[in-house]
Amino acid sequence: MAANSSSTGSKSSNSGGGKQSGPSAEQVVATFQRMRQEQRSMASKAAELEMDINEHSLVIDTLKEVDPSRKCFRLIGGVLVERTVKEVLPALENNKEQISKIIESINSQMQTKGRELTEYRERYNIRLVGEGEGEEKGQSAAPSRDSEGGGSKSGAGVLVS
Image (tube, rainbow, N blue to C red; front, side, top):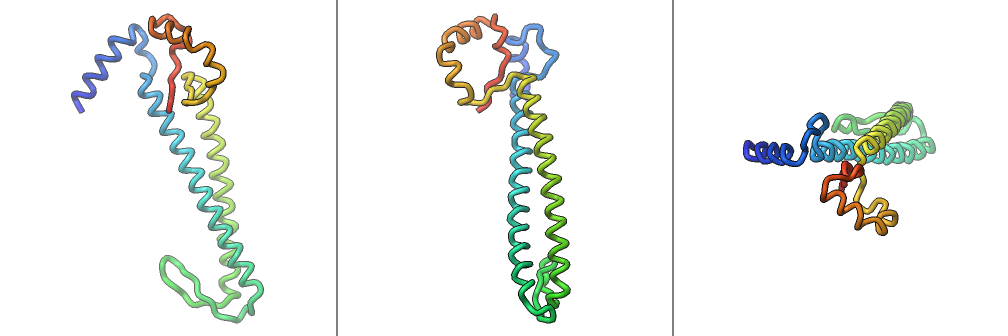
């Protein structure tokens, strides 16, 4: 770890010049990747909960057609419990409502995270690989010469794969 930090330190001191106030390109990319991963995990959780709602709906629709005094089994905390349909049906409907509220909360958090990602991308001029390829094909020679010399204003952008 000490070898990595010393080599990183020498890279930043040689290439940065007087720009040590902001985070390095590696830190910007790492933060961006972390934020994207958080958004992906939220989307994954929302999809998982949507499947749970579909399962609850299927069970609720099935139990509505059954005699309320009929016995059924419900899995609670890993334990299979015998109950009647009239006891289980309200609990399932309540669970479904709670899951819907959680999904709404996750969706609003995802929208907030999306806005944060967009602001972060704009602040640090982050471009994703494959983004804007049509725009830059004609201009690819000029910016590459500027970025080698270090005189380009747009050279501060970060390319993320």
